[in-house]
Structures are given as structure tokens and as C-alpha cells.
Amino acid sequence: MKAETSRRTILAGGSAAAGASLLGGCVQPTMAGMLDGADWRRGHRLRDGSFPAPDGPVQDIDVVIAGGGVAGLATGWRLADAGFANFTLFELEDRTGGNARSGRNAVSAYPLGAHYLPVPNRDAAALRYMLRSFGMIVGDAPDGPVYDPYQLCADLEERLLWRGEWQEGLFPQSGLPSGQQAQRQRFDQSMDYFRRAVGLDGRPAFTIPSVLSSVDPRFTALDRLNFADWLDSEGFTAPALRAYLRYCCRDDYGAEPEDVSAWAGIHYFAARRGWAANGDGDRELTWPEGNDRLASLMAARIHSNLRPAHTVFRLAVTAEGRAELDVFDHTAGRSRRLRAKVAILAMPHFVAARVAPSVCSPGGLSYAPWVVANVTVSRPPEGKGVPLAWDNVSTASDALGYVVATHQTTSAALGPTVLTWYMPLSRETPQVARKIMLTRSLERWQEIVRADMLAMNPDLDGAIERIDVWRWGHAMIRPTPGFLTDPARLAARSAHPPVLFAHSDLSGLSLFEEAHHHGVAAAEMALTHLGHAFESIA
Ligand SMILES: Cc1cc2nc3c(=O)[nH]c(=O)nc-3n(C[C@H](O)[C@H](O)[C@H](O)COP(=O)(O)OP(=O)(O)OC[C@H]3O[C@@H](n4cnc5c(N)ncnc54)[C@H](O)[C@@H]3O)c2cc1C
Image (cartoon, rainbow, N blue to C red; front, side, top):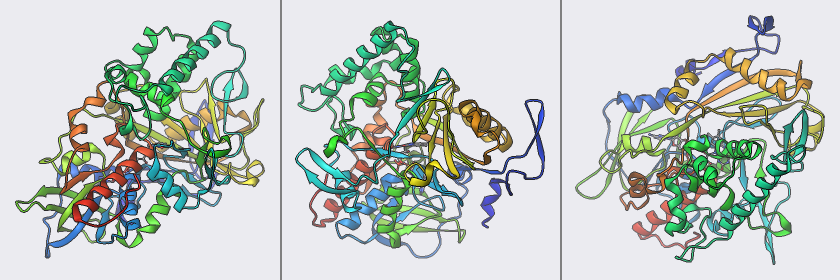
């Protein structure tokens, strides 16, 4: 076991592990589980700058990718797909995948972060190309690509606990006054208008990848307002609608509607036009391990180029126009220097600004902290109303509910499973929330998660075997008002070799499709710069 695993709190054993904690006045046996998360010690070391000076000869290389999340992996995958091999990908953590990493126990694989990919838009050509190469798109029909049905989320996709009964979908379908239902319909019509809207530049007002969206000020001006104010100004004030929209903002952006740009709030509803045959356009792709299925497939393609447990801690541009990078090897405890024709920073923007201050300024970007808990249960949850869905949400909870890791397998309805519980810490400022997150004990998190799970599913009493808690301090960028014109983000987007950027932060929206787009774009720009012949897939 490496020394750094001491940051983990481990309570070994089964549900009857030794020890006890006070809960609700009665003594509960301590729950098995582990407290873990993104490696903040390695991250903070970048801030403190305590790395040894590089030793050994300087290594010359064509391309360095710094960061092995979805964007960095997509960069490497695209280079390899174009027949280009002279590159190395350095990843700070022991494993690649970034926020799309997963865990596994004896019951199932499960997500630690990103868990689904909606069927991509027609605009996402490079992503479709990759899904086809992975065998997830299996053919073409007149109405669009044919997806392998086993990759699409099985029925039931979503259910909502509303007034004690589970209903299909995420918006209450019964028991609402007609005025509230009417507002929901008017909201849907409004989003439909934005979904169809085209700017004076001929581009869709909202699409994914977002760089292909219109820059017509009629739409981009929405970025000056926050989503809550825009909803107020449009008369969308019905409590059930506002609760649903709050859920959506927290689900995609980890932030409250008051902190989300109105452009981003509308983007959530208006940008998706999934393109697929058989009416599958509004479905989602998901796997037990979540988006790590895709991250791992990309990583497998470039296995020999990957260097996990390596932090890129300094980048500067030399007088000869090369990118000079200093990299710390966490296993060997040594630093070395590389000189690259192109360096692609596929790390969050706030980290890139620290690593390469001469070419990247921090800007006004902020990041949402999230907690994800994987709850292993001896039997699947039930409940009054519709049966268990993949995604299960309660209107009475401040968390975002849970997804079922074994939903895609036929045995899901019978045996033990893992339920992945999500919670963005959006009520506090990110700084305060991060402090809470780092100081709260495993036992306290387990109490919170257990109480929330049992409030949704009292039938799980006695069935919870362990709760593993994962913390993301800087989980995702928050698209706050003004993010569209943030100069630091725009400068990073228009960078040229020798230093390029590739991360979902370039879009300001933390989505698989955005990360993938920027990874592919950076790879193709690097190939052009190096004079390597290829056919663009973008
Ligand atoms: C809880 C949670 C749930 C989510 N759910 C979904 C979902 O269901 N669907 C979806 O589309 N999106 C989801 N997301 C968003 C997800 O973040 C993006 O989809 C995508 O995975 C982001 O990829 P990225 O490469 O842009 O960034 P990251 O995942 O942030 O990758 C950056 C990588 O760079 C590494 N790195 C940082 N600094 C250095 C350094 N100095 N040297 C070397 N390496 C470094 C990091 O360790 C990391 O691996 C979720 C995010 C979270 C946190």
C-alpha cells in the first residue's frame, strides 16, 4: 500500500464491524466503508510548490498531454487513431479517468463521479465516430445512427418520490394544482422555442458541443442574468417547477439557480437534440461503472503512452518556441524535464494557471464540491408506486437521489446491488463547502447518507452493508453569470502551439461531450502543427 493511502479512513469488515456511534438516540454498529476522494494532497502540493528540481537529461518529445481525465484521454485517443505515437500523457492520480473514474467491490463496479452520456447531438461528430469505433453504434438507419440497445439505459430510466409514492419521470405527474401544471407546460414551450432557435450567424442558439452554439447577442445576453432572476422575470414561479429546475441546475452544474448563468440554465434544456434511429434520441448511455466505461476504452487504446502518478508542476515556453515541462514522479520521488513541440494542458483551468502562469491566467472561474456515496445493499430497494428505476430521486431530499449500478443487468431485481448517491454541496459557498467536506468524518457522512436513503426507501432498513464516501473538492466548473465572456477561458480556447488547452472548463460546462470535443480539437491542432497528415473527424 502506498504511503499516501494514509489519507483514507478505512473501517474494514462487514456491517457488524466493531465500534459504535450514536445515531438518533440509539446505538448503531459502525458501518463498514471508506472515506476517499480526489487526491487533494497532491493537488495542494502544486500550490505549495514543494517539488525537487528536475534531474537527468532533458527528454525531447513531440507531444505531452498533462491530465488524464476524459479530455486528456480523448486527446491521446485521437492522436493514436490518427496513427501518431510520439506522445506521453501524465496523470497526477494513480489512475486515469478524472471525474469519470469508478470503483468496484464484490457486488458490482460503480461510478465515483460521471455516470451517463446522453445520446449525442448530430453536431458531436467526433464523439459519434468514437462510439462507432467502440461498437456502441452498430449501424445506420434513415433517421440516424443505430445504438447497441445494451448500451442504452434500460427501462425504467427515472422515477421520482413524490408524496410517498414513486412516479415515472422527474416532475410530479399528479396532485399539483392546475396553475402549477400550466406553468410547467409554458416552461416546456419556452425551452422548445430556444431548442429550435437559430442565431443571425446561422448557428443553433444552443447546442453541444457548446462552441458550435450561436454567438448572437439575443441569446448570449442571457449570460448577464442568473437563472433564478430569469425565471422570475418570465413568471416561472410555481414551487414544483422551481424545485425541479433547482434539481436540474445542481445535477449538471453543482450550483443553485441563483449562481447559474441564465444562458447555462436554458442550455440544460435547449441544447440536447440527441440523434439516433428508433426514437432513441432522448435516451442515455450508461454502464455499471458510469462513464469510466468510455474513459477506460480510450485509456486502453493508448496504454503504453500513459504515465499515472505523475504531476506536471511547471510549464514555460522557451526562446525556441518549445514547451518545457517539469514533471514529478510520485512513485520514484523524482522530477524530470521534458521539451515538447506541443504541450496540451488537459487539467482544470485553475490548476493550469498555477502550472503555467506565463501562458494562462486564473480568471474568475469557480468550482463546485460534490460528495458521492456508494451504498452496498443486500437487496434492491422497492417502494410504493412504479418499480425501481436507474435514477431515483426524492422531492423531499436535498441530495440528488441514487443510481443503481446493476440496472443494466437482468439479475438487478433480485440480488445485492450498489446504489450511487449524489450530493453537490451547493448551499454554501464552494470555499465553505470544501472545508465542511474535508473536516466531516466518515461516520458523519455515513449517518447523513443512511438517513437520506432510509427516508427514500424505508424498506432498505437492515439491508445496507457498507457506505463508501468519495469527495470531489473541485468537482466541476460552475457556469456562473458572465462565464461566457470570461477572458481567461476565452484566451485558453484560442491558444496556439506550443501550448494548447483541453478540458471541459474551456466550455464552462462539465459534460462528457464538452471534454471530448476539446480533447479531439487539441489533438487535431497538434497534428496540424506537426505536419502529420490526417482526416479531421470533428
Ligand atoms: C460527481 C460528478 C458527477 C458527474 N456526472 C456526470 C455525468 O453523469 N455525465 C457527464 O457528462 N458529466 C458528468 N460529470 C462531469 C465530468 O466532470 C465531465 O463529464 C468530464 O469527465 C470532465 O473531464 P475533463 O477531462 O474535462 O476533466 P477532469 O475529469 O477534471 O480531468 C482532469 C484530469 O487532470 C488531472 N490533473 C490535474 N492537474 C494535473 C497536473 N498538474 N498534472 C497531471 N495531471 C493533472 C486530474 O487528476 C484529472 O484526472 C460529473 C462530475 C462529477 C464530479
